[in-house]
Length: 86
Image 1 (tube, helix red, strand yellow):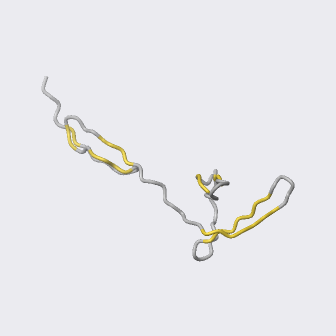
Image 2 (cartoon, helix red, strand yellow):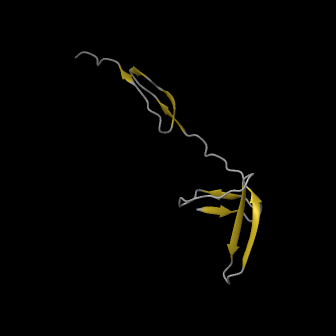
Image 3 (cartoon, helix red, strand yellow):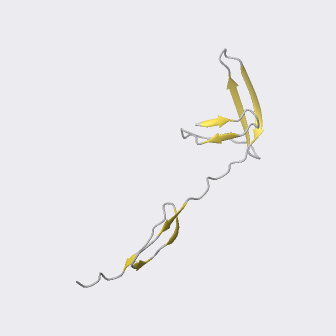
């Protein structure tokens, strides 16, 4: 869902559907809005697309090796020490 901040005009959120995006250079978007009584307004706006922040996870290995910070969807290898005898 995308949300328009009425104070600063910032559009935030995550789109809920995929589809084509048509941009003219340099990254201008054309927005059309319709109110409850079918009045419409349209305008072009400059647009900056900011990537989502990276998410890292901490892996702690006890009695082995391979711990550290890992990016989401990373492949992680760990090695366990031999089990104590007995």
